[in-house]
Amino acid sequence: MLRHVAAGIDGSPEGLAAAHWAAREAMRRGTALRLVHAWEWQPRPAPSVPADMSQRSWAEDMLAQVSDSMGAAHFGLQVITHSVAEAPVGALLAAAEEADLLVLGSHGISGVAGFLTGSVSQRVVARSPRPVVLVRAGECTADEHFSAVDGISPDEIPETPYREVVLGLDTARPCDELIEFAFDAARSRATPLRVVHAFSPPPAYAAIDRLAPEDGPELLAEHERAVVATLRPWGEKFPEVAVTETVTEGRAAGELIHASAGAALLVVGRRVRETRLGTHLGSVAHAVLHHAPCPVAVVPHA
Image (cartoon, rainbow, N blue to C red; front, side):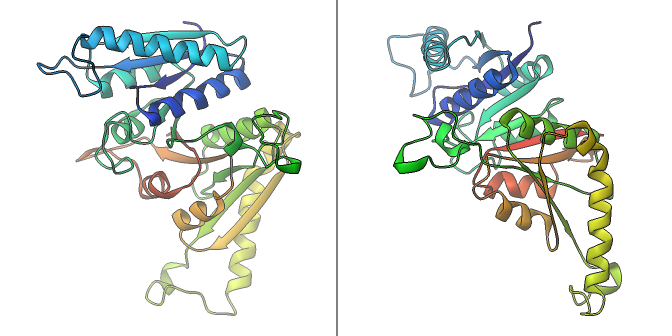
């Protein structure tokens, strides 16, 4: 199948934001955009479906409108549409299998007001075989770029520089897929990559949850050396990407949420594993998906 970025849409503002973000990403990658809508037949159509239309007709019309909008906004972009009468989670996971990347709205696909909690999006992110990007409603081109001079919007000056990409790095279990995704995202945007590594005190300090003053500098230097060593081969592979390392004692989720303020994209990993309760998203990924102010990419890895 033709290489593409997929976006799950449902006619909501969140879904439309996901489609626009996916279209911009497809343009950066030089691939097609595939718009996917999944719906289950219901005896009573959803409130968004006009009384004089079937669910299938509404889905096809909605997809056509969004497709036309994406094509008009992104000259030269090839747009493919796909509507399927299936449960959303299964349909979106199938779409992810065929895509380079899947993009979803923050909570619009499920209609759940709380960001991700109990939603279709969370189940897809936790099980997707491909990276998934979550986008909030209202996310637009200007949010990815620094403000232009003289109050001119980045929408009017596309060459306005991108904001940085932020990567959450665990040096104890570094993952090639995760690191490469972040470097590639920074390269495609011609923007710096900020690598954030947060560490906790050793077990001996668990009771007091902080380091002794004399131990802090030595432990910090040890973690800084680990970060530099982990990133060295990637800097050689992506010499055009400027890298800034932020190494700090603290909780990873909190440090990443703080670092993501003003970023174009936050990249975190999800270890592929099964538990007694099924697939597991991970505490850090779960926290940043709830609280990070920018789009979040979750990259599955072994």
